[in-house]
Amino acid sequence: MYDKGVLLSELNFKATRSSGAGGQHVNKVSSKIELSFNLIESGAFDDYPKVLIQEKLASRLTKDGVLILQCDETRSQHKNKELVIKRFFDIINSALVIAKKRHPTKIPKAVIWKRLKSKRNLSEKKANRKKPGFN
Picture 1 (cartoon, rainbow, N blue to C red):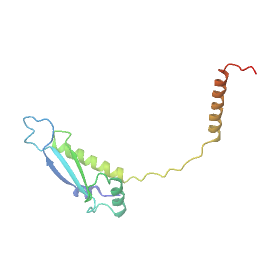
Picture 2 (picture 1 turned 45 degrees about the vertical axis):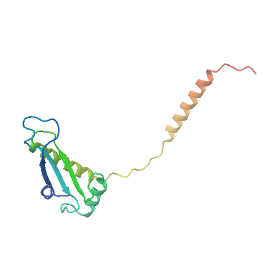
Picture 3 (picture 1 turned 180 degrees about the vertical axis):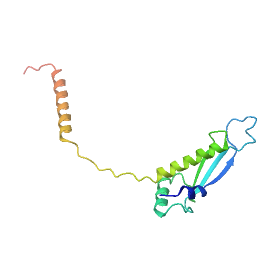
Picture 4 (picture 1 turned 180 degrees about the horizontal axis):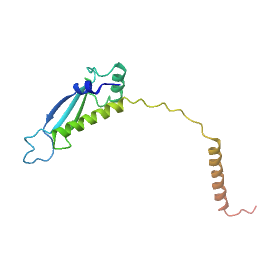
């Protein structure tokens, strides 16, 4: 479908300082990783997969067709980079999956008969609770 090596070479990384509670070392270290991938200028995909990804990830892409992901889960820049790359490939793979078309099925006659029988039994049970009428 696509070449992982070419796709990895097209990724841009930027390291920034992580948000959250401070500490002695936190203001000196850039451990947060921001991944950006330009889908429109990518050479890793053909036209159809690009369109498929654009449709599925429309809410996650910028107006210029750039996918931006961030990771600041760990204190290590390298682990954050690995996590964001894994998340990126998971998102791309899920966007390339084509869902099967659903074929509606008929309700079996035995199921319809069973439902009507249970309705009949319930109405008889409720009718038996009434006081007998003397006419």
